[in-house]
Image 1 (spheres, rainbow, N blue to C red):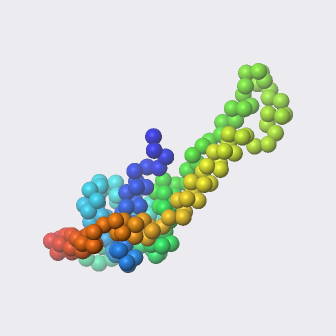
Image 2 (cartoon, one colour):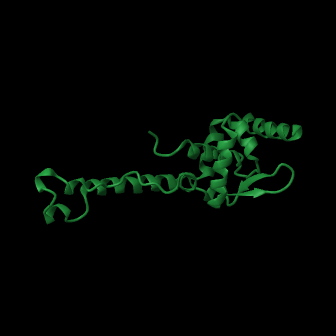
Image 3 (cartoon, one colour):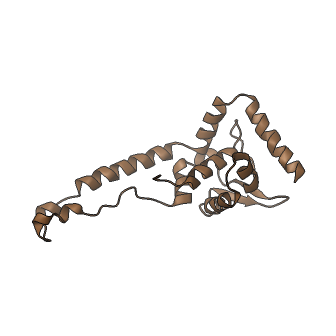
Length: 169
């Protein structure tokens, strides 16, 4: 089972679509992003509601409307997107198993509860490291990584696809 929902992946990829190879931002509609990526439009719409509530994107007026980034792509981290879509999640919930051993007959001795649970400490440390790693990577970092791998024509193909779609709607 995945820790983060598929919505987090869709959200990250969608925000990457809103940045070009030079880091310039572009306005896009949810319908355009859904069609470009082959993801469900209705689900992506719900994701953008969450991204908007979190202050990561803002809706735009005008013909067709859409969204643009609320702040520069280099200031939006993967952790920001994950929290916006899935909320803050703890990967571990301590059940204090150490206090329920049968040999304690429902009355654990004081030494058992002295200090933090070792298992919880390890899991809390893992969570902190994971969140630190996610906060190190921005939408701009990921977009640039993608564009470095892509042929030079990819940027043009995406721009032409968007322009063609807009001219027919």
